[in-house]
Amino acid sequence: MKNFKMSIAAMLLLVVSFTNAQEKKKMNHNHATMKMDHSKAMNMKSDAKAEAILNDYLSLKDALVADDTKKAAIEGAKLAASLKEFDESSYTSEEQKELRDIIEDAKEHAEHISKSEIDHQREHFKALSKNIMDMESITGTTSALYEQFCPMYNGGSSWLSSSDQVRNPYYGSKMSKCGKVKRVIN
Amino acid sequence: MKIVKIIALILVVVFVGIQFMPTERNKSDIVPPTDFMLVNDVPSDIKNKLQISCYDCHSNNTQYPWYNKVQPIAWFLEGHIKEGKAELNFNEWDSLSSRRKASKLRSIIKQIESGEMPMASYTLIHKKATFSEEETQKVVKYMENLKDSL
Image (cartoon, rainbow over all chains, first blue to last red; front, side, top):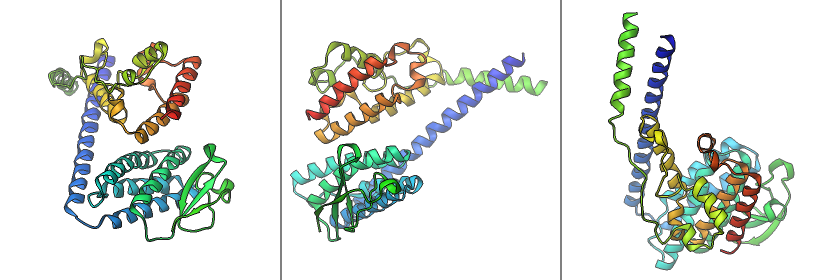
């Protein structure tokens, strides 16, 4: 009898938690669509949005340099949000296609960074860096920007920095000065 | 004691009640031309492995286990399948750009290598879905080659 009661109680708990989880998902979803609508309503110049993405990317880079997983997760989420805000409508149709592709891919990496441990975050950061560089080559930027390169991480990996001083986001304090400036972008 | 009985009764009613709530089914007879197996030249053993270990949650067609119609298990399964398909749908592989394919392949390789996928809650029941060391190496190598050829 006791067992029976216990199992019924367990079942109820399960039901409640599943229903809750589904509700939460729905809420998240609504939130995401709301944000998208918002970005459509705001018809600002797309360059400013690209700059915002770049800024968030650089903050994320700094968090990785500092070995700060939590901060990197927060910055990753911020970056994902500003990527969603991006508006490619002022570009040529070919560029639009390319940009949509870049943004979609970058968004996925940023989202993963927002919920992973530091090793994972750094792996995604590599792919993300490539995306942000490709984006910048289309949108351009007004801020100072350097492409830096570390030959050791994962067969050689690049990242972007606003300073010509090398601070390695892939190794952090372990090897913070490993790397070199590969290209002065701006 | 009376309260316990009442609660127990309510629980039974709830459990029976939720059985009538509908769940979406992930079933489709159509394999679209964008399917991973159709656009890539996949060796048959790898094809087989992917079908058994991945396609239940990462395609439009799930081979459902017998208990799939019991709530709340059905919800649990449906949630996983939805999430899995959102991350990666092998049926829609060729609709992805090269950039997206490279990202997906990177994730596939990492997750199979680390044993993150297939999920433990899945292999617990689907023993055949488990990757042996040899299978891991084979599939990872195949995916790496595919990534390099993009």
